[in-house]
Every structure is written in structure tokens, then in C-alpha cells.
Length: 369
Image 1 (cartoon, rainbow, N blue to C red):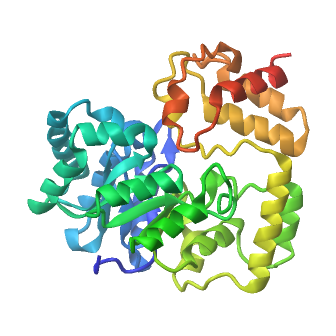
Image 2: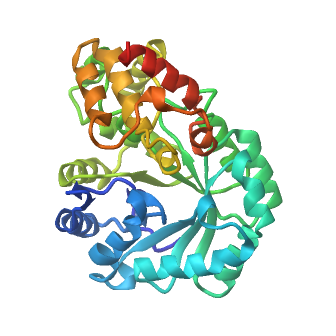
């Protein structure tokens, strides 16, 4: 892990888009700025942006810079393999899509109680360790979305895991549904370096409710994202904090405070705690818009968008939310909340373990009166 230059990484799940495709010109500019400022860690997965992320990195990064200029992480995702024999061809296709001969990190993706048995049955961990022996990956790890006891089980069964990527932000820190703090403590117990994903919780900690925004405004300091990312980066054992940047403006903002990183002050931490209390009292849907739920939805319901609109109405109490709700599904083949057939596919892949079917009922009651 000696090649990593700084503790801030470019998450490539939310690249800038233009006309339904990755905006290559802007992504190239972002890659250039990232590298020019001394950062070098990039994170992708085969399914990101409808299988466009890896190819975009080949175009914008790996074909334009020598291999020693960057660290590249990719992942093995559940629904791309049904048996052990599927894994190697998939892995080779990922190398090809990214335009590299090896990955610096290769992670078993979104591990939890629901899919760990599938990975075990298909000997996925063992296969990835073979890739390491062959020099096709440098470091082997997992990304994790579940409770602390499940992580403890995985690290006990597979001590070869070198690094753990976890969801970690100030809103989830003591949330019983996510257990960020407890999961982090398990990583520390087993001496595993931590990679942080969702430090701004899919943008939820950027677009704050008015009362929460007022708290951070009193600091007269940085952006909302800066407090969230610096919170995550300030803990011991944090190897990397990822930010899913989707514009040059976001890139420049993140670089401004991570180039010369300083942990949150006591005053800033106190403000963060106030913001957390405000959020918890609002009972918002804690969706991060990862969009895993939309891939297999038979009714093509844009679940994260509907949840975001529901939260907007909860925060602002205005008619605009109703207008946007109709826009999401009118004339574009997307289903309404009430179209849900309750098959449960969405809930099985949700990293936040949300009761999506029940929440869609709530959305339908609110917007389809």
C-alpha cells in the first residue's frame, strides 16, 4: 500500500453525465486535476453507471497516464457470477475494460449476510487470492454493508483480507441500522486498514435541511461536504476516504481541504453532532442513491429518485415535490410507487437494508392521493 500518496480517493460511481453517457471531457479534466494535486487513488466496479465506469476510466485515466501514476481498485459483484467458473472470465474482462494488467486492490463487493454464502459457495475469496498469487491483484479486500457481527465472521473465516471498505459518515456513526462505529471498531480489532465510502451519504450531507444548514453556516468555514469528509478522514486507521465526485466544481472543493488535510476542530465536531440530532428528529429515508435497487426492478421504478422526492417534501413542505414526482415517471417508462409488485428484489440488494416495499407504499400514499 506504499504507493498511496494521500488519504482521499476518487470514487467513480457518480461520474459527470451528458446525454445519458459519461461526460468524457469533464471526467478527463477531473482526473487531471486529481493527479496534478498529488492524489492517485481511483475506485470503480463493473456495474457502476450501467457498466460505463470501468470503460470511462480506460479512456480518461489508464490510456493517458503511466501505470505507476495511479492506484486502481475494482470489485467482484454478486450478480455477475453464478458459479466459480464464471469468476475468472469476469475478472479478465474487468482488466480489459479498465485497460490494465493488474488491479492494486480487488474487493469482494458489498459483502453482507445475504451474499457472503454465495461468495463462499463459488470459492470467490479463494479465486481472488489466486489472482493475487498470479500478480493480477496487489491487495485483496472486501467492501462491506452489514452489521458488525457479520464483519467479524468474515474476518475470522478469511484472515487474508487486507483491507475493508465500509460506509462511514457522521449521520450513520451511531445509527443502529448501519452500525458504522461498531463496524469500524471491528476493523480496528482485526487491524484492518479502512477505506471509507459514502462519507457524504450519497449527497444527503451536502443538501441539508434548513435548520441543519444554519448550524454549519455559523461556523463560517468550508462546504457541507468538507465537514463530512474531514469527519471520516479524522479517525485512526483510515487508509482512504472516497468521494463520488460528479463535477469539476466538486473536485475542486474536495481538493481544497484534502490537499492539506486537517481533522475537525472541537467546535466543528459539536456542530456535526447538532446536525445529526436534527436529522434524526426528521425521520428521513436514509437512501444513498447507489441505485443497486433499480437494476432488477421488473416495474422499472426509479426508487432512489422517489425517496429523494419524499425527503424533499419532508424537509421543505412545498408543492414542488409533487411536480417532480410526476416528472420522474411520466412518459419515460418508469413505474410509479404504486406499481411495486412487492417481489423484494430491491430489498435483497439494498446496502442500507431499507424496507423498500413498505416505504414505496408510504410514497404512494403521499403523492398518489
